[in-house]
Image (cartoon, rainbow, N blue to C red; front, side):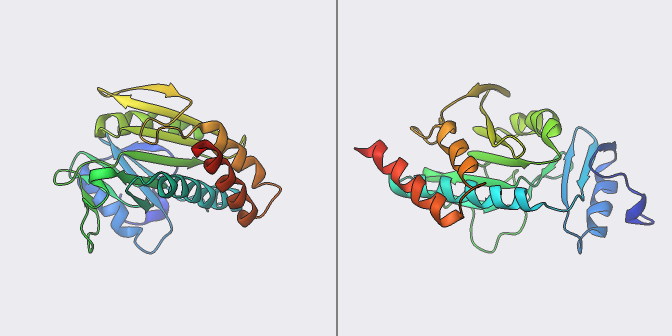
Amino acid sequence: MSETQTQLPTDTWIYASWQEYEQAIANLLNEKAKSYYYKGHMRLEMAPVSFDHGKDHVVIIFAVTLFAALKGIPATGLDTTTFRKTGVQDCQPDVAYYLRERAQTIPAGTGIINLDRYPAPDLVIEIAKTSLLDDLGTKRSLYEELGIAEYWVVDVQNAQIIAYAIVDQGSKRIQESQVFPGLAMSIIEEALRRSREMNQSQVGTWLLSQFQQKEV
């Protein structure tokens, strides 16, 4: 498995030991790839990030961070960061947030976040252009087991957010965030739709007006 990285199937789950997984990701250090390990299987995502995926990624981070700032909710957002339980689980979600008393849990200088030492993030977000079914399926199970409080999947094709609250290693659909009370998925979905027709500064101005209306 370690001879050449081109021999490895990508964008699918394949059986591998933790040692094989470590070798595979070591071979990918110079590649733009995301990697996951769960229940004795690994997944390497090598597909180029599309324009639409990248744009929605920015809108989501802006919307969530703006809401947190306006509501005075301490928040630390992370972009494509590795969370690891060595030998057991590994993931690189597109976006993650630590909130409130956890906002400054991870010290500066940390590389991979060791989940045997630090808590899991409060919110994980996957931006799905080509990986929607996997994000809704296997990855959701992975995040349930890691103890994430809330998980969102952004369906880029349909400008839709499929959000779940996670409790006791299970999940249920929600229409309003529980970690960000008052933040409705419909508002962010409308921002995503508007971003198809407006530039992001205009979308930001619209979001600000919506969030400030909530305060009146």
